[in-house]
Length: 71
Image 1 (spheres, rainbow, N blue to C red):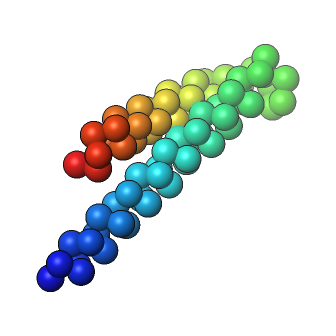
Image 2 (cartoon, helix red, strand yellow):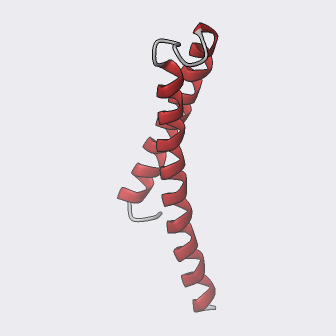
């Protein structure tokens, strides 16, 4: 039973790191689309704003979880 608990804790930490990294990638994708609308036009600025906010939310929640020690 102790092995199951340890396995779960290892995978939870890896899962949080993956979500943190995906939050950074989503924020960077939003920033790339927001760059003066020069890439795909002015239509993409709303999508870029949503992507940036979602990415920052993932970064903030996962960073707080990692600082607490994986609770």
